[in-house]
Length: 223
Length: 212
Image (cartoon, rainbow over all chains, first blue to last red):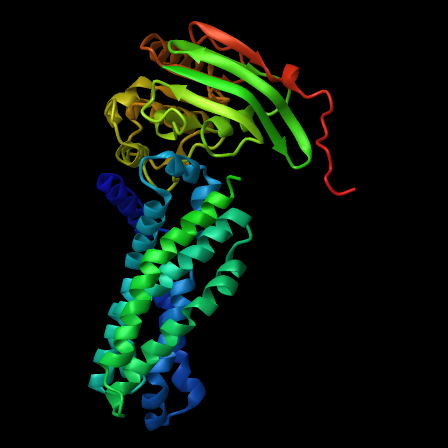
């Protein structure tokens, strides 16, 4: 069973990294959001440092949603989802493997790029560290919650709109606690650990519930 | 091993495709499903594959570890080939071999068996329709499954490839496997039963409307 899980993970990663796979799209979008923000807000360094974490997180959130709508629909359209659903690997683990591959291909590059982009927004070193840590913990939550929207997009064949409508509300708590944790690095009464632990909890819950809900959504199509 | 279908009914929207369908398929035999377009050949195969739920009826594969839920004993080859165009023929087949489990032939042997030897490294996107179909047929050979469900398996195949595939199918049947194939082409899969779905259409083709 773990062999099948790894095979699916490797195939999805290979597909994402091949030309036209779309792995770089999220990072480029993230870069675009962060680079244009200082131009729009103006050269107020203090202001940028204060709202920087929020801007980086909004950019990462939206960048994480890119490509999610194709996650299951591509397999549904070429018939691969039917064969995947018939294997020994439960549909929940199929969804988890695809989610993990999607996060490695699109979420992890955001985490790596974030410290560089944070410099553009005049973030303090402590803030940069906190931001990178929250992104590392929070982006998997977004991807795995996104699996639910991705599954519905494949079932109803209506593409990206569903992902945005279904997934965005679910990601709000992740955004709130991630930005709160990053802000504690600038001082305040709340220690970093308090919102960060809630973020960890949200992420763990999403990793378990996302694939289960996505598999349930995919099964609805068979009735 | 024996595939038993009792009193099966399939509904699409308000239209009853077939009702009261029953048959028994013994190991070492093929069932050739025929019938005009829209009589439910593909729907029957999807129900047998566990990819669609029947309106009524029972299915079981006697002799399987779980007779009522025999999806894992089944190969399903639908209209779609389930390949990724960006990956090479070899990568696609190796993926399905690892994914499906219970490996049978190696990737190279399977590609040789369907006549694709030498094309392993080409991306599937550049293969012809017939070559893609052959690669899909090779998927049946890389994993061990007793029951093959084939939906128009020889679409886009030339005559030589059709004969070659019929030979592979006869070998599967001769080894005690089962095949249910929906087709318009005359295929010789060895000892076969016939099922004409056109004959199973219910007298009243429209299901009763509950509203009204």
